[in-house]
Figure 1 (cartoon, rainbow, N blue to C red):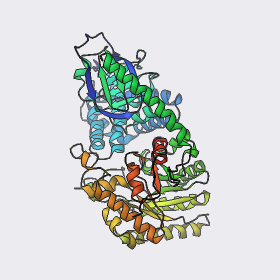
Figure 2: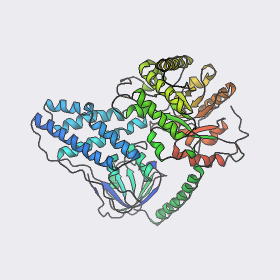
Figure 3: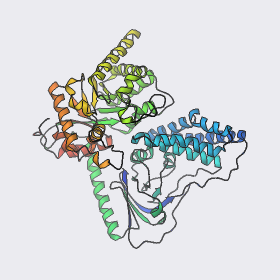
Figure 4: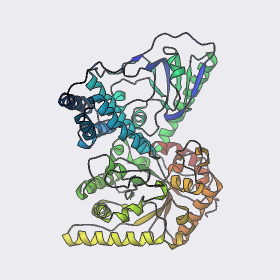
Length: 550
């Protein structure tokens, strides 16, 4: 694959493309359009020769990734190591090798086999798992390139360039210098690995800009990328350039203020303290975060721990990860959610395939109770780690009181098993997420030590509108009165019982929604680390003492 920026005639007026913000920031420079791989001229041989060719290509791709990984750290290293593990997994190459044995040429066998996996990932309704399809596409292209005899060239961009492509593989991102440059994708996802890398490195990025056609015709033209508004302006006139510069200056000033606010206290204008916690998906995220920005961790998603590996992690592996997170928190509370898998979050070897309606199927606590042997391992690891800090265990997708009764029994069994071995442990508080309207409407019937509102699922279940479904995405708004009433009911019911209550969905990090959540009675919010500064600024400008609780 190569990138080129031939000179283009300027159009009579600017071309404005709108997409979805994926990484904030601004870039101004020539538009570079990434060309697709053309394919090699390799001639297919015998099945034995094709098998050897694919194995050699896999080895070449793995070696290239290892070279990149040796120079990377943090998230980048984790992503590349994940890809290396995938490429070395027989489950990935096996179907292609079987097809080769049947007479299929190596490149087609590889493309068809990995294409099935990519389609499975893209079919899920969860952003996180859909984004993992980009890792598979990255591997697919890298191996196909090695197989065809083409060189995997690095990405070289002019000063200030804006790269326009259908999508961008993480390893391609890591091969380029992005200082002062930006990324515009016709497709892509804001939760993809490359978007995560872009945010970590301060590279502006916009996804979902549509067909490459309009941009391809203007390769080489001046481009203005606004990673906050989600726009790309091609061949801008003087007015568009001036407006872009003004937005850039304002954004830089706001970012500086938000960064300063992140380590301060979250206190409203009338003196009400709000607890601000962070959400964590991967322990590696903590390496670049200062614990001073938060009052603790309100949500640790354990799905990545289970998914980004070959096989399910054992008790010792899980215990070590949980202890690492507690050590970072340094005495602050850490709420770890048990495995929230199933439905839109598939995990090979654990979740069910082919459910008619996965969102209403065997997911969350339902799946944990259906797979007690896996649940028991996680509970023992959590109880063992709880001796190291202020750990709380949160149960996802609870719908009826009987589920919490069974969870309590499972926790007691885990404690008994650890006691029998003479292993140190502590039974931490066991709480539940309120994500299903049934739980919000009858919270007084549940045996729970604390409550955390999962605004994402509560919103989509209340409004029967998936936020990842473009045709109904506008309906899936936490600001809708029905959702806010359920949140207020949950807060009131928890307060009446003296049970701590928080919110850990995306709504907690949205400055537009924070005033509504505080008015509903919430005084504890958990959010993405990047949202902390803006949320604290929002809180500082509000008067909430008079807001009725409930």
